[in-house]
Image 1 (cartoon, rainbow, N blue to C red):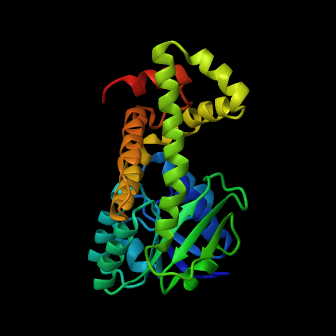
Image 2: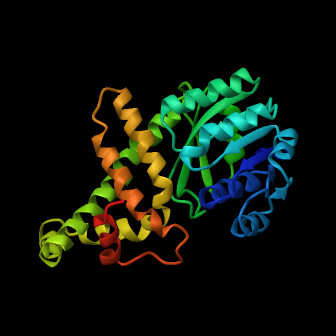
Image 3: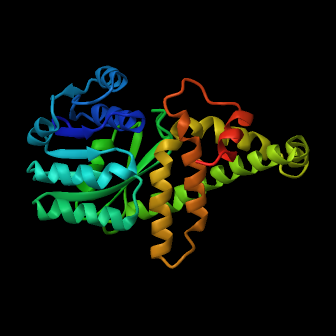
Length: 282
């Protein structure tokens, strides 16, 4: 357990709240900054028992550990800001970034005098015990694992250097989220060509779980698509760096970009409506 350890959480969004619940349950004192955060973030933080330290500077000045859970496009800039504020503790980047980005974040923090752990979260943010895991890599990974000892997100240490946890996340999401984007695109194509009903009928015969998976690809992802744009960019860069084609995930990025209009909508759109957005040029 991590009883009494002060941890700064940046920030308690949907996944960040699941991380915050794990930190609190494992005995940590968790700080966050309400500066420029939404009313929904404030409400989530209060329900979780997080302490509002006011500003980011106050969080970094009072925390032994910082855990960053932000959209991937903001991960490096946030790390630079924390480093510039003089943080000298242990920084955990738990974002969906490429291994190269994770190593760059580690370099930025290291030059500022902080320690670094690479983290990758796999699983939904539903706070159900055992539903999600945070993989941790780097020399200080074992110091962080007790912060997740009580769940609902389970901490798993990889005996590997910085970049490994992000690589695992890239591999998992590279298939999971890109395949869902492809399903949404195929439904849009079938609707455009007037063969959607026939496609669904054929799927029911030859691939019985696919109709429901295609519906789920829209229902589960439309409201979160704006977050996946940067993630697909990070995955494309990761594959390119490994000598693999990046086009799969560049295309998935475009699908999610076209669905990003559904950010903060109260309910997912019907497939036909989402298909119209996918077919529309961005």
